[in-house]
Each structure stands twice: as structure tokens, then as C-alpha cells.
Image (cartoon, rainbow, N blue to C red; front, side, top):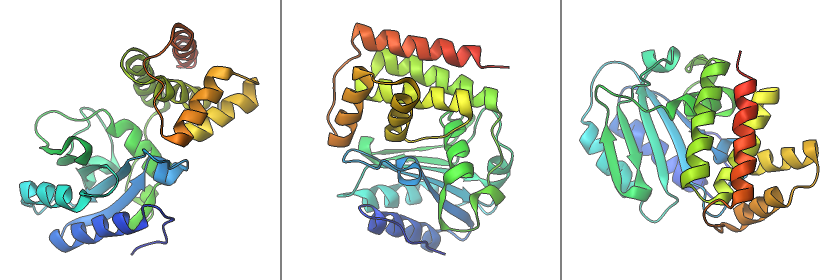
Amino acid sequence: MSVPISEPWRAQADAISDLLTAQLTSVVGVYLHGSAALGGFGPTSDLDVLVVVRDEPEADWDSVGGALLRAAEGGRALELSVVRSSEAAAPAPPWPFVLHVNSGAHRYVLGGDGGDPDLIAHYAVVRAAGLPLYGPDPSAVVGGIERDVLIGYLTGELEWGRDEADQRYAMLNACRAVAYADHGALLSKIDGGRWWLERFGPAPLVTSALEAQAAGADLGPCSASARAFVGAAIARLDSRRS
């Protein structure tokens, strides 16, 4: 069953869900996550989707991956993962998946012996705030992620963002990671930045990151001050582990 979805991605979200349920007989649920579910969907936001399928029967996943790439042409970049229902119900390493589609990179990947640690965050957000395009409430399909597991994942994301990503991305991810470590709140990048300002007061680095996020503009590699900010956030996350 489809649910009302706010623009600007309603048509694309519905089209992806309809394609999946038309091509597959094993779909349990199709769930939006990321900024589409958490809020703060901006000019450069991807469409993030988690698809849960029954363990059997198998499908022609090459065909499904190609169809999803074609369906995403001309729309927002699609980040979509397909996982089996038994693995979604009890998430665990190595975080296996059946299919991953990244239309921004024009590719799809079939699951194998490895997995995708990004599913740690996907599962957590889907369970807490996912929007069902098809299927039951996500809490009936997706199991919980242990707090320390998610904090460990977020720490790795902050380290990568500090060293490799745009300053806007690194700063706002640091803000929302601290919000989770301190209060268990799963927030969008924009809400994470706003939370930081409300909690700790004026911070020009955070304000500039929020402005860039709203405009869909990059700030470039992290400055020394931004690296120090993210480093302090990493230390705070480490101190919150049990």
C-alpha cells in the first residue's frame, strides 16, 4: 500500500515501489529512509530505499538492478538496497545484502559473501522512522541495532568524513552523531545542525554548513577548525560507549 509522500520525490518513490512489486513476487516491504524520512530533503539529497524480500524464491537480480537504474534516470540519485527478510529481522555482521543500486555511480552490485556496513544505519533509521511505500510498519519487519554497534559505525563515518568528504557533510554528520550518542535521537543533517546550535549555542562552522546544505553547495575539504570539531565529536562518541 502506498502512503502520501511529500514532493519533490513522490512520483519517483512511487514509481520505484511499483516497479519492484511488479517485477518481484517476494517483496515484503519497500521503505524510504534517509532525509526523505527524517526531514531536510534538499537540492542534492538522494532517494534512499530499503527493500525487504522473502528468503525464497530467488529472482533475476541482474535484470532488477538494470531496471532500477533505468527507472532512476532523470530523477534524484537512487541509493537502494535489497535484503532478505530473515536478515532484516535480526541484523548482524557481515550485514549481507542481495542487491545494491547506486544510480549516481550508474552501477548495481549483487550481494555475495561480504556485506555492507552502511546497512547498520539504514536498518536503524528504517526501524525508527522509515516510510512504508509498500508493506507493513517497518518495526514489524526490521530488527533493532544495538546502541554501541551504531555508535561504532557513526564513529567510522565521522573519521571518513573528516578526511575525505566535503566540510558540509562532515560537520552536519558530526552534529547528528553527537545527538544520537547523547540522546538516542536519529536526525537528518539539517536537524542535527539545528540541534547542535540549540544545545551548545552559536557556532559559525555549523551555521555555514547548514546554509550550504540548504543551498546544495559544497564547502570543500575540511578546514583545520572543522577537523578539530569532528575530532571532538569522535571523542565524545567514544566516551558514550558502554
